[in-house]
Image 1 (cartoon, rainbow, N blue to C red):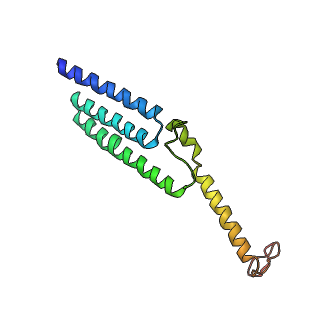
Image 2: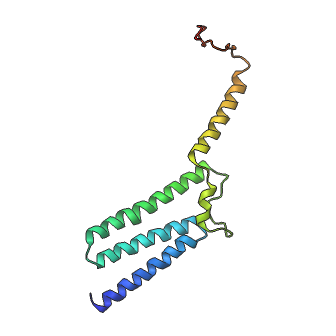
Length: 143
């Protein structure tokens, strides 16, 4: 490799390190996602310089484009589904610590099931016939 290629590779490596630090220490999730995509984009250019165009195209397509899109898609969906939860832009905490604040999907489903069960039991208990223990709703004894 020539001197100019070495210089370009060094600049790309420094840009990758800087973007990685922004990803880790950033205070905003969208900025961290964009910086993560920049790391992948710099890596794909570096692979192209190192004469690996197939790896460069794969890194650009999957590492930079698809992963960044997927992160933004999931972030947008979480904001819609969990409107009371803060996800980013809190200057007191880095973006990395914001992830454990988000409840898992099983917790969200359990809360929805509890809400549905409580709302259906309160609305159907007034007019629903009582079913005795060991008796199926059709009136047949099962046990």
